[in-house]
Image (tube, rainbow, N blue to C red; front, side):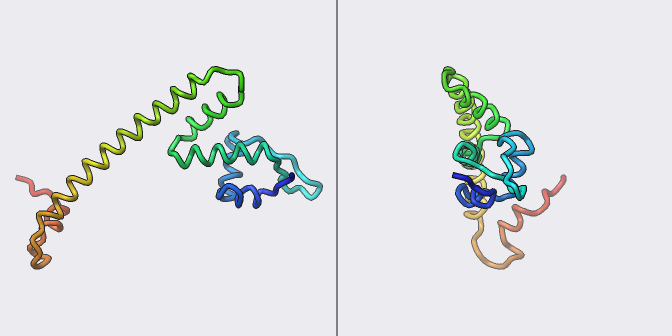
Length: 134
């Protein structure tokens, strides 16, 4: 099964420029070329790109994806390193969720403080405006 870069992109919902970038930074190996110099991918590259894409969709950084790929390339290796990266990422996700919940509470309080009326009296506009210095 030979795939073009366009077919790889379509199969993984990845832009062609992104696939080229992943090749440039070494996440994807440089592909073989056809006689007309088109990139020629196989199932291994498709699987690797799918792994990268899914990892990125879950919010892993490029450095984390690189580390995960390095660890996953050695099938006999203990998965503790992968667990460590995933747990570290989970902590980051939990921190972001806590930040978003705090932001939501603050925004809700600002919205709830508005009693309607005119823009001149609007508590939301007031809250978003510059802080009065005293």
